[in-house]
Amino acid sequence: MSSKLVSNAVSIVNSLSKDISGNLVTGQESRVAEYLQIQRTVLDALVDKLEAGSDFKAEQNLENVLEAINGKLDAMTPYDQGVVDESLKKWAAKGVTLSSLVDRQAA
Image 1 (tube, rainbow, N blue to C red):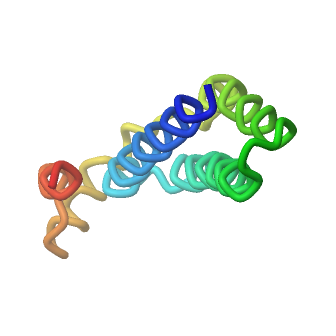
Image 2 (cartoon, rainbow, N blue to C red):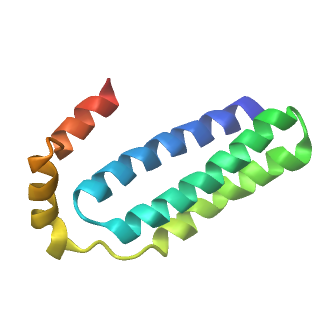
Image 3 (cartoon, helix red, strand yellow):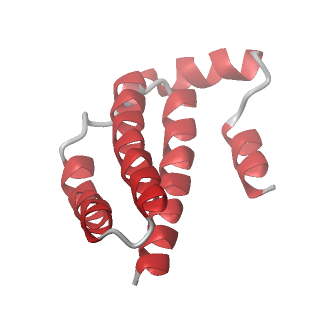
């Protein structure tokens, strides 16, 4: 179970990174901060687990953190559609678009 748990944690961190990128470019700074906080919690628990090896407490902590994510995601600040267009234009002027982020993440 331990390797599957670690794999799940890595997958979740990767997904959160994609969410962070998309929310940043669309002007959702509050959501970005919340995603980063969740991501940091997962990464801290994952590092503890990897450093502890087969320690049950570290594994249980990582499992608890992963199980709590859905509740945290449900409680996030609502998406603000009103700032999207302006933010997309701002980032496009800097050469960053949603499609460029997707292309980079796929690489």
